[in-house]
Every structure is written in structure tokens, then in C-alpha cells.
Amino acid sequence: MNFELMVESLPDLLGGALLTLQLLALSLAGGMAIAAPLAVLAVVGPRILRPVIGAYVAFFRGTPLLVQIFLVYYGLAQFDIVRDSVLWPWLRQPWFCAILTFALNTGAYTTYILRGAIRAVPAGEIEAARACGMSTALAYRAIVLPYAARLALPAYTNEVVSMMKSTSLASSITVMELTGVANTIVARTFAPYELFVTAAIIYLAITYVLTSLLRWAERRSSRHLRSPTSNGALTESAHASA
Image 1 (cartoon, rainbow, N blue to C red):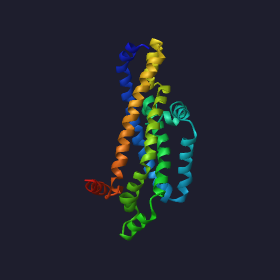
Image 2 (cartoon, helix red, strand yellow):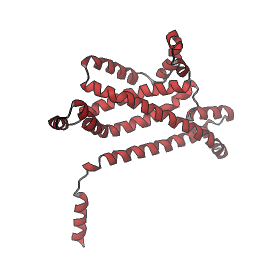
Image 3 (cartoon, rainbow, N blue to C red):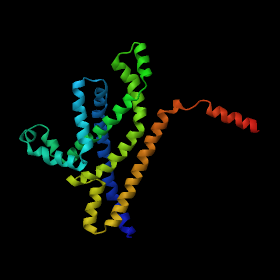
Image 4 (cartoon, helix red, strand yellow):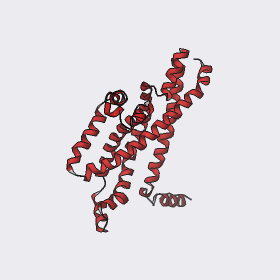
């Protein structure tokens, strides 16, 4: 194994990893902006909207992400109305098409996660909010959505990690993120093993940091559920043994 090549390629790969993180952050932000209102509408919205939301979720969960990227990047350009619109300067950019596709994809998965979490909120919480005179909007903003977010966090952690790995598909439309940079260096050096091992190590490091942060957020959001007597019981046992 050529360790010298791995070290020499590290700055370029880290530059690609920075773009990977940018793609991930923008995609997750866009996906959450899509998913939060759709999840609420899927539970308490007009019934006529539910099949539309269900079709959106089913399409993006049921088709490969690579196909979705090609449909957005190559497919939209086939329509004159798109090329003549004010959005065309954005839609002609590969990085924007990648972010748009990733946001729509993770938005569908996150909608499914949040919808299940909202339905899992105990009915007593909602009844208590109504008994206090809260409107439906206030009850969802103050009680239901925070409670659902805590319930959804473990599943959302998996979605974040999955989306991070999916950003590698952006290289298929010439976006030079981590995998794209690795492919470019491999084409120049003919050393795929060293380059992809290094890229895999960087992906593993990013995954470790992301999962650690999300698990910390999960523990912090549920700290009030821990037994307040656990520390006292340990203290009493220590005094008894002494």
C-alpha cells in the first residue's frame, strides 16, 4: 500500500469532504423544512391532502436516489417552461440539482418518521393541552412537535447517516465531493485501493462525529425521564457498605 500517496491526497480529499458536509447540511435543512409541515398535515390536515403526501413519500422512498438525481438534473432540462423560467440559472447547476434531489428524498423519509412520531405522542398530552385552553396550533407547537421530535430522534439519526453516505451519488453529475475527488485522483494515479481506503476512513470519521452528536442530543432531550432516585439509591448503598 502506498502510504505516501494517501498522505499526499489527503488535502484534496478533505476539501471534497467539506463539500460533502455542505451538501449534507443544506439537504437536511431543506428536507426538514419539507417534512415538518407535511407530517403535521398528514396527521391533522384535510383528508384530500393525505393521498398527495402519501404519493410524494411513496415515490421518493420507492425509487433509487440515483434515478431521482438523473430525473432532476437531466429530466427538467427537457422542458421549455423550465429553461425559460427564473429558476433555470439554478437548475442548470449540478450542485443545486444534487441538493434539491437530496432534500426531496430526505424530506420524504423524514415525513414518514415524523408522522409516526406524532401519532405516537400519548393522547393524554394532547387532551391536557386542550384542557388548558390551548389551540390546536399552539398545542402542536408547544407540546406535540417537541415530544415527537424526541421520539423521532433515534430513527432520524439513521436517516442522517444514510443521507451522508448518499451524498457520494452527487459525483455522478460532476459534483466534486469526497467520492468525486477520489475518483478524479484514481483516474490520474491508477491507485484505487489507497484512495478509496482513505475516503472510507474519512466517511467513517464523519459518521462517528454525526452519530455521537445526535446520541448526545438524544440523551440530553430525555434527561428528564431518568429516575431521580437512581443517584440517591447508589449513595444509600455506599453509606450502608461503609
